[in-house]
Length: 177
Image 1 (tube, rainbow, N blue to C red):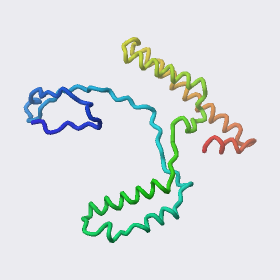
Image 2: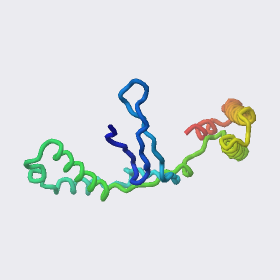
Image 3: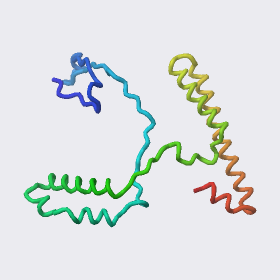
Image 4: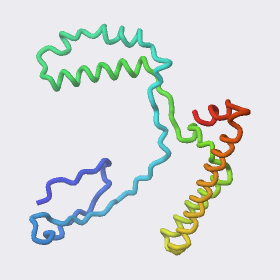
């Protein structure tokens, strides 16, 4: 018997059908359709910005809570939930968040405009291969050529650092932060 089908979105899965047992086991095969494809946009991850946090206010907010009354007569699990709820409310008020996006991150030193264009070409070739417009061998050659170029770019950066280290020590530290 089918007990549950778990999803993270309501209405994502439908048309559930049992298709008989799987070999000699007591497990049953299940056929279903995904009704709605979920596309994820670029997630802007928000992280806590502890540099701008007001820990005095945080301490004060948690100190104002009458913990004896808030936790009285509750079991361990319920007490933990109350504590967590109070903590998260105080955190939301006192510790601001900042966005951490892939676009704001520093790209590697060896990454240049030419390589970025190659990666776009690589993604396009992958898409065409998945659609059956490009043969596997052709796609593999494109990927291997891109890997070779990345490898050469990394080697060139290392050679430049090794060559210039005596005359310009700062160049080493500025590129490896």
